[in-house]
Image 1 (cartoon, rainbow, N blue to C red):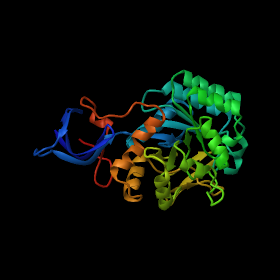
Image 2 (cartoon, helix red, strand yellow):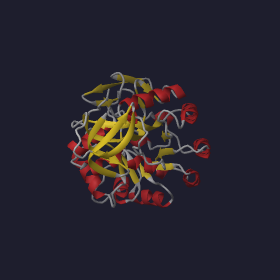
Image 3 (cartoon, one colour):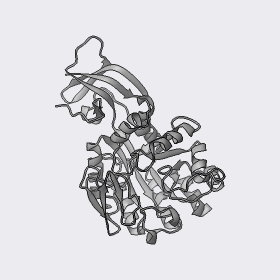
Image 4 (cartoon, rainbow, N blue to C red):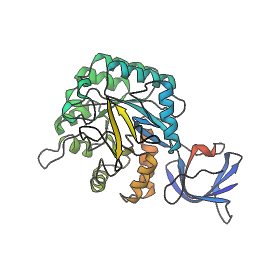
Length: 363
């Protein structure tokens, strides 16, 4: 079978009018299409996407089912959406739940798309906790730092989101020294406190804009410091968490390309039912958003394939800028090997989309 590919993202380059020669279920060769007539055509082909913030999918939440099977079910649901590598994300909870999620991630790491672990909380600002349960929020402690050090010693990529202004400097330094990606989120940090944390090894920001105080003319805060920094930053691209215009402002204001990436912040409803339970509350999809009983946004009902479509169709980015945000940059943030499409690779390990950014399954 000869598959025409209008646009191919591979090796950090966007190529046009390409073709896959397919033998059985594998890609036998990648070449220019030339004058050949393909058996079928796809609008876009790229490596499977990479999401660094996946709280749940397929009806399963990391916090509710912190087991290897639970993480694999979440990854499988994401795979059906076109995302092939995820950081399962355990949010603020008891130490036992967080440690169970860490053990599950260790057991599943390197298989079925489990690329590491994101620990979001519980060391957050209660003032900016969002849907995180206040009763579980606590200062950064030796128990969490020791857990992260153990995961890193096992070679597993780890991201930990915390409020840097509240973190003990010695414990913070141990996290940085472990090689974990320390990310600021759910924080009331001032610009000065944020810049100090950046100097001490803070290297990322979690869901830019959300769970951060607004930036003003005389108080840039964590958001202003983040936008002006050369640290990486994740952002939710559903048009609900961040208005399209504010997303454009954020992308234009960064000091260099390749610093901002998309995250889904996906919950169990992605690839699953229209509701789930966390902290004893039922969260439902309502008008495309997830809201808890307090009226706070409770994660997102979106995947990275739709985020890619939004970056192009709603934000106005060219494919060459949008694709790295859902594929290459997240992998670089976590030190993962670049994703490639190569001869010998199963076609199923490639993201194939039509002109409307819908998934194509070749039969």
